[in-house]
Image 1: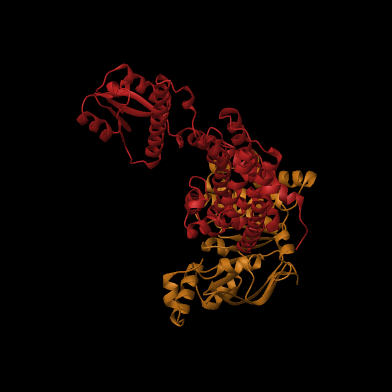
Image 2: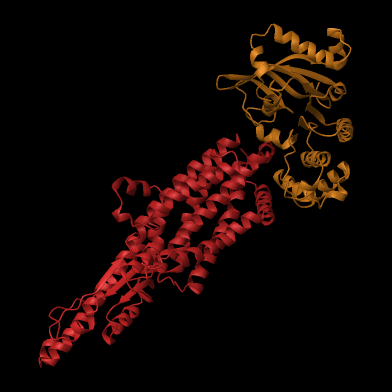
Length: 257
Length: 381
């Protein structure tokens, strides 16, 4: 099986604080995987390690066949990333943002023009290209951010809470877009707090306290714990884990997201 | 680690210029601030003391007393415009600040002068709250008194028929070099090049990087394949450009508006300014690596600006500072740049005298850029 992500015992410590404590999973290429878990569970840290931005303290991982420790440049060139805050330049137009990210991914000349035209068409931004990003609504900003992340035709798309704070209609449009991309063969890793989004994923990983406490398809997971809905499952996991976890005091206080 | 990519570098460069173009505040800062500061320092911050408002109580009311008042006006230091009667009124003028100097001419002034061996008295009261003003007023009136005495003495001696005795036994000739009119503008305007470059460029540089951290765009940039060197150069180069625009503006305003013309080599000035610019870029970069918000960056820049104005020799001469403050002032690149810029502007000297300051400035540039680049890279990872 062709694996998009293969991680073995990933650990990340910040000083004395351990954000990720031994995560292992394998994600086949072309699948959509959702990360769910409470705030501060270590989802973002895990994602940033897979992007090659943070260096794992222990363990190893390959993304698209490249080692996160030694080949982060290759990984960065082949993944698309979009974070919870729509990290676009507000004072630039949509087109200028696209120009910048095209350049940053070393696209130039004809290739750059073609790729820009392709994503503008794909995401439906044609009428917005000359607008300043600051003038766009949250839903549109999110689509522009996605367009920027797709310019270099990434094989893996990593989305860190892409729909946080976006209205339901925009969220649905976005979700459909993601599913279409997956059908075109892009592997997608998405972290979310919305269970309806999680339910549509091929695989779900439940992250709690820096550990992956459950991994599988949504149906399998529901069947395993005999629950009707993912919401119930989520709460069940949190309560169950919190009971026998001595660190549940820290959980109540919150922490890194 | 891949190779340096021009495509990525140019993408950053283009984006930075767009930011600057869109951001009114930084444009204003880059263009209006140099000119504003120049006008401010050129006109307001003027330590040349002249035309001090002066109040006169002339009890003599004679041709002699009137002539004395006129010669007082002719010194250009005093403006004897107000005439009063009595000490009470004089006190009022000095207390309220309407006058800085009071001149009291006694009733027998004319009579004493006319007398063959008489000695006339004049009382001068000086508002000493500002020592600079007081010192200037005092030396002006003392000089006037001395000249007047000599003049009258000469007349008296001539009247006695001692024509040969009018020569002065001792003649001290003073000549002031470099700034013969001793105008503070000539001293201040070259130094402003350093101060303005420091303030504008440090602030703009730190802003441009902190802004990306603040808005979260840095987070997005680090997951792209861009290398820290490409990002760093792409972000800093526009400010080198702005630095040169500011430098040109200041030079042009200084030369064409204030008439302060550099007597040394302008290419050398530009070259050494460039080295100074790099130390400032590095300082801006260091600020941006510590500050999390633009507000913090602004505060940190001000923490840098204030002591650099006081300690670099911009206003107060470094020679008279206590050793501790002198050493502290030595930590600012501005201190050395001021030596250079004043040397070139006022004395017209070249590298033969400036090599030491230049060497120190180069050391600052290399060390600061090194630390700043390292910190910048570490912040990205």
